[in-house]
Image 1 (cartoon, rainbow over the protein chains, first blue to last red):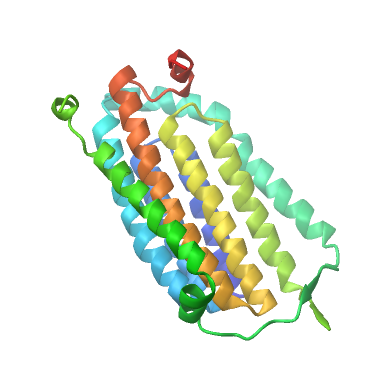
Image 2 (cartoon, rainbow over the protein chains, first blue to last red; image 1 turned 45 degrees about the horizontal axis):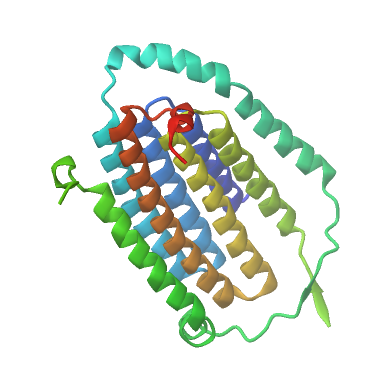
Length: 164
Length: 106
């Protein structure tokens, strides 16, 4: 078992923890762990810039947003935790079995892949691809970031400022 | 001329499918809006992972990274806007239960 396989197994386990855990804060931590492990995978495959962005933005910023929303919405007493956990287990107990089944089935199928890809083009630099070849994407990203700014305004808007 | 995908593709493909199943189950088996957002995040992680694998195997990592950077930016904005909508919904209904969305106007 190579190191990459171990990291991939940990990645799937972290994602599974994010789905199974009852407390939303734990799910957020598990999601950040998933992002961090995905960044390790990206770095191992040579996508260094994307790995840095994944680690800083997805594991950092998104976790902050999730924690903010959880702190603003969760007002349930902790004594409900056991009841919620039982209800949750009833809905989620098949998930690990399904994932193990799918994984085992796919590993047994092992169809030889016949998909043919075009020859790799010039390797290039991600910066030149991003700034020279994908300029339209950048315009889209700027517009989407503006939408995100409005999202942040809604997120931290107070009730008293609604009418102003 | 063309190249064929190496055998390591299958290993990555299995983990991609597992992440996909996990995210889909998380979205479908819950009624909590925040949980649905977490499921969506897991789904986007699987897509990001597969984009990088595709770039690695086809030798076009620069293009794949450019795509992934775009996906990450969109992911963040989707999460922030969805979080704002969830907060607005919580203020209106004092609940995060997705079944309450049936009472929305329109």
